[in-house]
Length: 266
Image 1 (cartoon, rainbow, N blue to C red):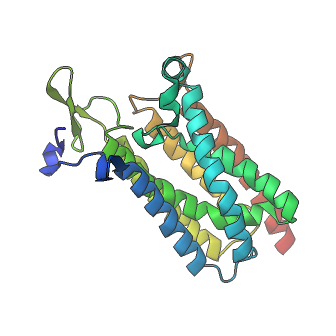
Image 2 (cartoon, helix red, strand yellow):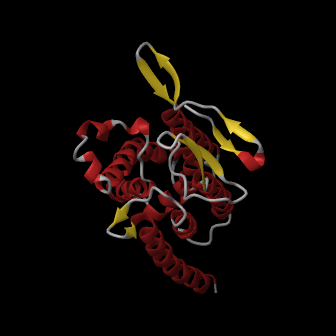
């Protein structure tokens, strides 16, 4: 497999999707990177557990359900919109180490899990989402590097300064594309930093959660427009449509929640 190159930065990455093998079982970087992101997020969430309105035990109980359900939903979302391929290759549905996790599927799965979990445990849904939102953004930021290793989630052909070279096995030449995985990794890390600050100076329940949905929606809507591997519903990029809907809806909710919190203070 040919290296990934950034010619204008004089960088070259000769990395295989397989990190190492145990016997005849391959261990993929994709899984290692996602696992690392989850572990780091949990560690930071634990470290910042003080002054939170949700108990740490309740967070860990939620995470035990949210992670597997989120991964399943992320995969289902991807498979549904790629059904033309997977209907003819059913065995491939289970091979998530090859990539193919759609973040919006995971987000939707996580929110649904949180709704049910909070109802059963009698926990404030918005407070739980506020607690988790920054760490979700961090997981996304780290997880995008799994896409980099797998040589996926890149953008359209470009001659921009940050162009990334991927070797095309058909033409036997390098194609130069937008490193959209990098754009999203940077954006979600900035969102993580913003939400960490927001959680320390929160004015109302749901503030960090709403901000995540707004900021990520705006960033993803722009980045999705640059991608070459978008999931489509007809001629519409599904994730771009959801991004615009979510960012608009939650911006309205945020506006009225802010207005309400100011009236309460007065």
